[in-house]
Image (cartoon, rainbow, N blue to C red):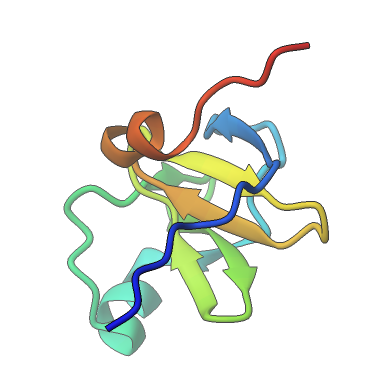
Length: 98
């Protein structure tokens, strides 16, 4: 079998912060649990003034990706967004020289 390496990819990235508009949208926590069937232990949860709890997500060609605590939002040149956990971010991405 032939081996390959991942091609270099220039991206912008920021650690997710609530209120910075980095997400593409929000889903009610009840919908995430019921419809998506996800374990929500580490997913970011935001309580709104009306008492509802919502979870932020980014949308890409794979669908909705819910943002977890300490995740980074990765934006490629074509503006497609991805989510990367802090544990893997340091392994996969390195600062570029200016």
